[in-house]
Length: 83
Image 1: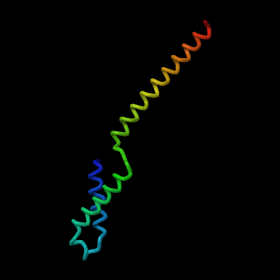
Image 2: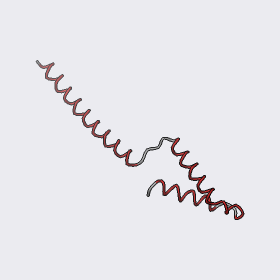
Image 3: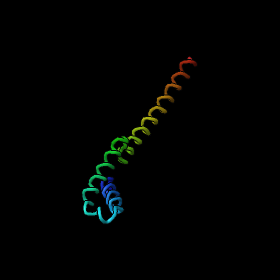
Image 4: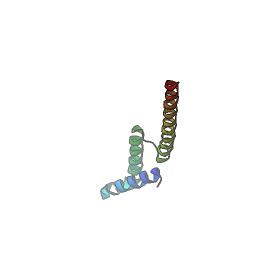
């Protein structure tokens, strides 16, 4: 589910908890709640799942390359010391 849709749903649920006399301003309250939630989440420096998955894949490839390079260095050191 889209994070913005989730924020919309959350702000609507929170706004529905408002007492009857204040529900006339419900749309305004929903808008303010949504803005407040978005602002709070932005300050938390969160990343999307897609960004996280991309960085995880990059890290995995980097680790594999590092292991290959470590193996190669070990082989070169072994051949140098046996010469």
